[in-house]
Every structure is written in C-alpha cells, then in structure tokens.
Image 1 (tube, helix red, strand yellow):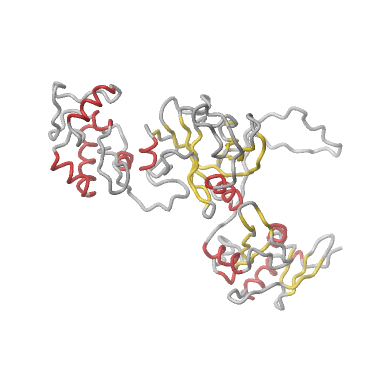
Image 2 (cartoon, helix red, strand yellow):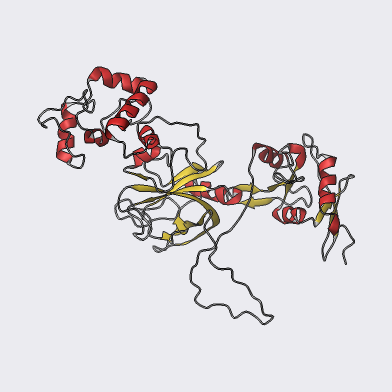
Length: 400
C-alpha cells in the first residue's frame, strides 16, 4: 500500500494508493489544503508526483521504509489502524510488497480469498496471485501453469462461469487485437498442456475486459482454482490455429445426475446445452513420483509402452499401497510403479496383480501375463505388493 516497485533493485516510484491517505504526519503536500487529492484525478496525481518523488513522504523516512521490511510492516499496520480499518490488513501488507508466508507459486495464494479484487496488474503480481504484469499465462513447460488471466484479450475466449474455454497466447496483432498468425506450443501454452497432463490446479483471475456476466466491473478478481480438463488446437475465428483449453472450477456442485435406467437405446440430444457438473480427478505429482517416472524413461513397467505428447513423454505414477486412510501407504520410491494410463487404471481396480517373482497377471475378459520391468535404483517393496494382492483378494479367482 505504501509504494510500488518497478523491479528488484530499482528505485521505488510513488503510487496513487498513497494519495488516498488523509493527514498523515509525515506528509508534505502543498497546495492541497492539507488533503490528498483523489487518486482518480490524473492531473492531481501527476502534479504531486512531480512535486515529491517519494510519494509524499520525507526522503529520510521514505528510504527507511524502502530498505527495512520490518519498519514498513509496522508502518502499514499503523496506517491500517488509523485510516484503513475497513480493509483487510493481510491484503494491505501484500500490496506493500510484504508477503506473510512462503509460497511456491502453485495452488491458493496465502492471505488471498476467492473474490478479492486488485486495482492493477502490478498489485496482483506483488500479491503473488499472477506474477507477470503483461502475459496472460504464468508458468513453464516443465512445471505447468500457475495462473491465467481471463480478460477478453482473445476473440476465441468463451466464459461460462464454472467452465472456461480459454485461448492460448501468441499470434495476436496488438493494435487490432485480432489473431494474425498461428499460435505455437511454447511458453504458457505448453505450461497449460503440462497442467492438463498432471492434473494440477490453475488459479483463474478475471479482468474487467472479459465477459460482463462473469467479470468484475473494474480491476482484476481472483476467482479460485480451476482444472485443465481438455486441450486441443483448432482454427479460430480468424482462421489461424490457436491452442484452446477447457478449464473447470474445482468443487462446483452437481445439480443433476443423468442416469439411463432403460434398456432402450438412448435418444441423445441434437442441441445439448450446458449445466453445472463436477469432475474428480486425483493425480498426485511428487518428487518421488517424478523420480520413478524419470528412471524408467516414462515407460510402462508392465507393457513397455512410452506415450509421446506435444510437451514430452507421459506416464503415471501408481502407488502400490494407497496413500491416506485406511491404507496409510508411504510416498516412497519402493511403493511406486511407473505405468501407462491403462495399466494404472487396471492396477488400481485390482485387475492387474504383481506376484513376488515379479510376474504380472492381467485379469479380465482377455487375461494376459507379463514380467515386471525393473531398473537399477528402483526396487519395489514385496510387502507392498502383498498388501495390494490381499486388498484385491476377491478378484484373484481365475477369470471366466
């Protein structure tokens, strides 16, 4: 709330939020009758900035606040008590560039609630809700996407509230805002594909320029966590290839369950509409799981399949003894297998059994046998395999 910084190591610049304070003893404001001008008065803001480059503070105090985070934190608390009691202190501290907790960039940001509104992109970045001040996607191909901003910048965007059809970045004419060339699967576009493959949640921020039904009237609003449930490339409105992503809000409630209770063929719907539904997709991504997948070069230990995707090879980590209650399996490398999606699902349902000699039995209508592929540096715990066999004992009868 006190100052805004252009970048690390640069000199702070005065911000309009400073100008809304009233009669603070350190202010030296001339020709304003001891009152700060309205921050929306651009002429007044420009005049004050020219008059005092320290945002109205005495130079000595300004330098202290810029270099001493503890002093700055105390000053914000004092300002909160005297002038901003209607605002949340944790947000004022974030706007002053004083984070209150460690944050790796993924998931819900600390001290920020769904529905919080920020006046500008720089403040949003300082609160670590969305770090870039220009780009609409924050993330990398390797780690996935942290957050996206939906603000009507791309003509192919569609916003349905709990579901968003989001257009990737790039290929747009900045003057006309129209697509002028094909998008590439790089940078933020690749990050969202990675988020799709891992199932990791992505923060969604809506800006005032987006669909009026679901966007704030002004500023930028944090709207919570969404999951990337689908991604594809197609020709957009301007006939150029764009990357598109379907994101769905996490935790949205089911309003109706469609059930086919007859034996007749379903009639379907020639003009299907949209309704709120929820999807649960649990894919854990840990350092342990990543280690196991890498040591096996993302190749299934059962069938030897290696799936290639636009952002690299894909495999899934399957815990032999499940995590959490009532199993309480460990998240350790000897309790993890590297499997293709099909054999991961079969293993979780007990349709794939691994014996102590590492022979693998695939049950079902077309039973098969395999030999588990092993690599140096990854030894599977026989006790966990026995637990899995016992847990699915009811399926161990010969298939019919």
